[in-house]
Image 1 (cartoon, rainbow over the protein chains, first blue to last red):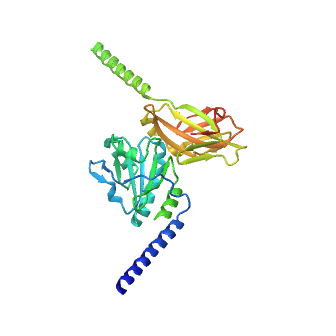
Image 2: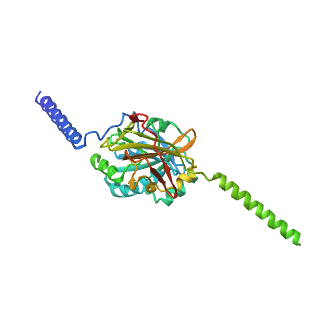
Image 3: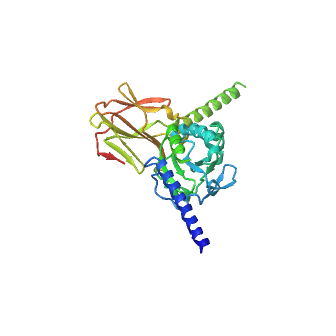
Length: 175
Length: 140
């Protein structure tokens, strides 16, 4: 009897702590930071890298993921890439994963460009697949960056050039 | 011997002319497909509007006429609008494919009174344009 009461009390205490932590986390995030519509199974996709190796987005779960959709001919993407290189170097150890998802270009186009831009983060290719673009609603333009929380939920989506300062603000608020 | 040499020179000249004509055909010219003014521009996740609507206006430009390879050579930091002597940096800069052709979307906020505007697009010659009269309070 006493044992059962103690167990229930302990469980309630744990739940209170969890709720309190969640409330503090929610308050820590600036209002309106997460503005994206829910994307079910956002990480349930597997893409190839430029060498043909299969990479599951599930492998990034547990990290704050910046999924940047880009192309070599995309003028603003070229401005963003050095920012991502710098942010990845500084935040990777703190659980931030930046993943460049090239849209509809061949590995022979992507590989030399990535080398030239000294990209230090993983690059995956959509090839001619449309499912991933449909999942994230990539129909308007590039660059589009989707920010995915550690729990796999989509927090924010931004179409068009975004400054390094703004990316860093979002990263700091979410890690 | 001389005839042979002349034939070789002629053939080389022909080949060079053909290659040059082909290159000229491939070389695009940047074109302003549309230039519009509005109080605001909004996309599903972004809204751009002038802080002082009596003084400023949102200008939305669609730029095409270039191939993907030509777009690739443009430095994004060198894409902006000049209104009079004022440089207007992009509030939105994105690319997309419209009817199978690559396009650049540029949104800036600038002085409502200035109609004489220039688009700077990398190393291409700056293009003068006049934004159309407001066709809607808010463009999408």
